[in-house]
Length: 333
Image (tube, rainbow, N blue to C red):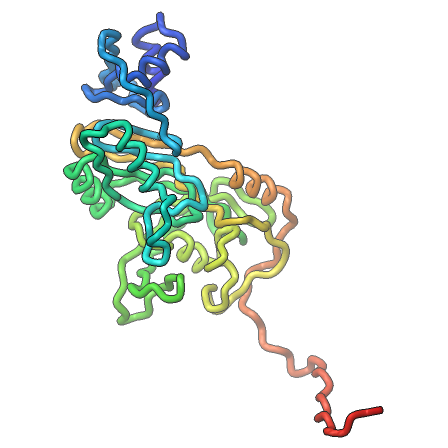
């Protein structure tokens, strides 16, 4: 099982304290499989070749404005908070504060001679968690190939409303090519579409919902949110797919008490892959953020929600509201 780099270094050098181990790693005096890694929290395999050279000149310490989950010469994985754009979009082209801009600023100060940052994949603005960037053109091309070949492990934590009918499952439903009014939809037969497959399993059940672990086999825009809503398990706090008419199976809708959240409770918790240039396994783990934990606690306390069912037509025997009389043009005095 992978362990933190600072703990692995202590196993190799018992004379180091935990604080001292973090210090020499951040100075750039420790290599993993021959490559410098200044991140003490980097997850490494127990068999990884780790070396400490106290005679190496210490690097200047440059702090990132985003928590770092992994860093080496070619790949950087950051912990993106909810509410921050991953990269500028057409509708937010002038937004200066994006994860990409913050990483570019960090790399420009850390590596002024080669400040390259390449986009590899994206997360929705209100989805938090592990987000990878390439630090060299060869790494970007290789990482994008890994994504296209579905050789990246991407697991998410999702809080959902409703009751999963089984403990695990898979959604294999193509997504329509066209992005309409800020949302995606499942493709109808004959429409241009991209294949989309999502696996999920129940981690914990609650009276009004569940905590799921979701794994992407493909990575389409809004894929998890759309697929879970298709199952009748909308992501808690999702303003787009959770309770919009036409997005439930057979036109169903949700009723009953719900947990209110300020954003969609979807978190990219795990990102792992074989480093395309070194062959070493990279595994980045992002802890659940505070707002996710708060919503999780609220969901555990919430009373049972009503079943998700298609709206029924009014009964013929149901009383009808009285007909309104047409208003006369004469005003009453």
